[in-house]
Length: 106
Image (cartoon, rainbow, N blue to C red; front, top):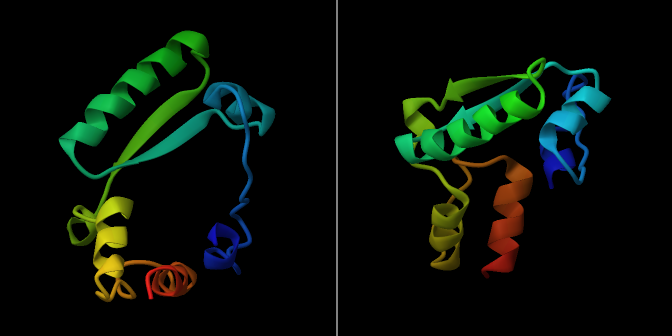
């Protein structure tokens, strides 16, 4: 679903890994990890991870980006809940995700 949702974005690579995020970043030649935040609760957890990553790999930096106000309340659990009751999520997620949720909860 992620690959389908990001089709046509040539500068985006979808991959998976096991192990430490900082080691994966290094293996890709990256020195920055970008994390999205919605609320303070996200910041608390992500800050702890970023500080540990800095301890493990001082050359790999973490940048936090705040969500736009229009999406600050969106989470996978809320989307699943809406879809499970037949609600529409098409304006909140890419089309492949909306189709998959509709199919799963029909």
